[in-house]
Image (cartoon, rainbow, N blue to C red; front, top):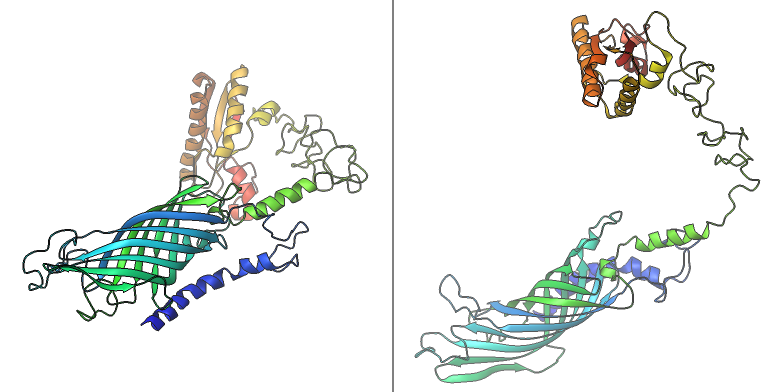
Length: 481
């Protein structure tokens, strides 16, 4: 049994050691950059003096052990066997974090289990032994090595930089166990078995899970549930093989604290796996602040070095392309900085806006202030991108003495009747928006022209044009009365 337990414990511990291998190799590798680093020119060897986190801590706590897989149990069974009896336990450990997701613990446990039909501190019932009713208790001491897997860090996305305060840990390990098992009946109490500390042959194993809560950078609160395999059938004080149990095992539930030691702000088990990389990037960035970007200068301060700038006299404030030429989105010869109608081609004389169109009642300033209200296909919803234009229209209309017709239009998809109704809804929605935002209702009326009022008449049918032209036909514009 003991050999099988050793093999099982080794099988549990081996994957955790393999998981920690990469980080150990990085720490022990003195050649850099290496295959475990980014290859950055700022890579430094990892040493105790260069680390920015704590990796040592101590843990302690107490709880209740419950003997359940044994001849005598601590919780009364459904068949009436035993009685509810509660012992006590305590632990203390020294913890070393190897990586952000794996660590080792050297742990000392001490406690007393209580099991059977009555508490050994109480008087035994008459004829207890004749009725098969005995009480027992076991005082134990144990030293073990535990592997600690931080599942929250192991499964955490490495690009998740948000802090977290809860962490799920898994524990497994082996150690050596010493104990004294007592049994009591109506004839008194006697020592049934003693295993003196600490013999290598008295091996035991334990495994379980713990849920940690980060109180602050120095202190963690943890609740644990551990299953302890004693590998001994006499641990419960009932005697050898009373009910054909191969091993007496118990569950140990505890509540404890972890104190993180060291001078740094955070502990490795709570450390963001990418914080070191962010730190290196910050350092590298700070070292590059003194680099001269443009050897021969940037005369017009447009962000493009003179060596590659095709327009060395760009006006201050003008947006430029990669070659330093001022942008002119509508290609009308007026750069965007001076163009009052950035997306509508116009003339140089009219500051980049179209000249006044005769016969349609549309003035150039109206084009400047109120152009570009477009809609999605089959929709009369005002888009968020239209809001700045409409807010500008509120100011413009309120400052003018004229009145305006809000004209809705569509592209050529759909029937004439459908598009007529859709264009009226678009015009009505825009009109209502303006009135709700302060325009006098007497200055506005609405009209829907359907698909008979195309900005690009050549888009009939719509399949003859690219979608941006059809979208431009699905519009609302303003016509002076």
